[in-house]
Image (cartoon, rainbow, N blue to C red; front, side):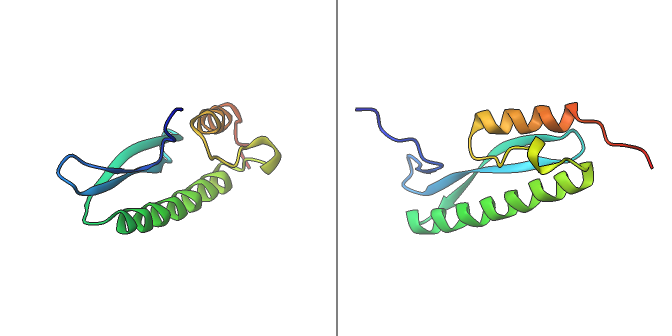
Length: 97
């Protein structure tokens, strides 16, 4: 049986970390990084949840600034949806007023 992948992980030194997603609004991409050094898994999970909340807010801000209609965009929860959202953001031009 294959082990489930999770964004929270334990480092070799025993500390905990998680994957972080952020939006780069200048080029409309989603960037991934690591946030490490947490003494417990619980702290890493709490930090991960905060980073996901911030990421969701960044996505919403970008959608508003690019005037992307909700039916055209994905509610991102996987790398495939992230790629689709990136494609939509780049492909859908904004109208000049």
